[in-house]
Length: 106
Image (cartoon, rainbow, N blue to C red):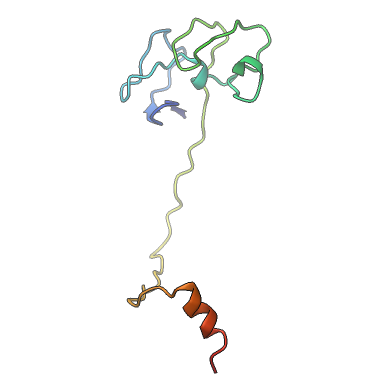
């Protein structure tokens, strides 16, 4: 699934992303290093490719020919049958001192 790096909005999958394409939700550039599968903040110039040119602002649109949109798997919460909820106590939480003293009560 394709998501915007800035707002995490789900995006429609297309073959290619135009250079000046904007996110429909937050208007961040989509054809940028942060959305690329080769982007890695831990490597030199933030790119796993050794043949790309340096891009000073990884959140701005660029003309990199090696750009490939990063696909992210989004985990959906598993549906469970009526999850049991523990009743919440209405008493105030114990202070550290009260917890310590309760250890030595008979």
